[in-house]
Image 1 (tube, one colour):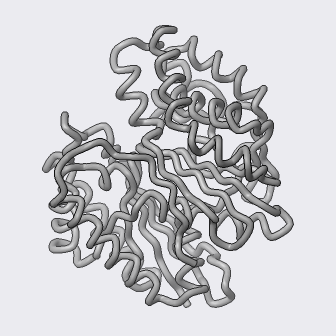
Image 2 (cartoon, one colour):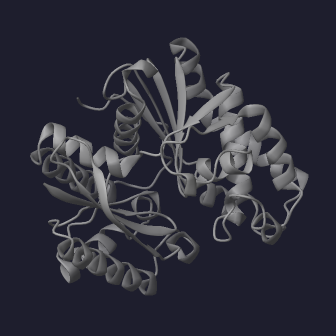
Length: 341
């Protein structure tokens, strides 16, 4: 059977078409549309009309590509950039009405659980108890577990793009004061998760996401062109040295470093701060870079639990969105959830 999944991220819309009849999502075709939605977000977090139009066009193109490759309607979801936007329901409605694709946003904890599943299947049972880190543009997902799905999952407002806009809005490179303020924020947000993991003592720590992949490359890991099956790791000591190097350079010069792409160069420093601080707080010396993440997790969950799972999870996500829309504004607490098996 051929399936497709569509991931609307802070920078890029990515389509993956995969063959799944053997229980493993083997990629048949991938495509991406670079929209940089997070850079277009207005004060107050709203996604402007021009960005919505671009998103509609990208989703429509992706759906057409999936059909041409023999896959059905993509399993389509948007991450923190849309999930946290005040006009998210209008955005989702526009995509559904104009493309027919039921784009949804998943709770951050569900994203973490799905990414954990992708990592678990890639790493295998020999990995033992597993802690997962995923730095996106808008949020950091952390999950820990001993089985197929995590025992707990947390989503924190520590995305590399979000923090770059908040802490480094003017100076390039940023001042030492701004860098210290960012470190304080990251430590504050991570303290509850770090306390939990200090009790759990995970056997292996893994990381997914382009941010971690680029940081690992910067610290000496093999380039992506060598393929998925080359082992890649990120050591805390190396990351600390790279962090200091990134902090001394403006974004344009960071983009000349190995593994740092020009679009992600501005947020590479914030990503390094989040990654290094998380490893330090949780006593992790080495991260293993995992090539499978949320898109593979979505496909695996549907293959293993049936397509009705996606229908149920998206229906619940829609209800959550509507409840959030009706709720009065207020601070968002840290949520640590145990996802359903």
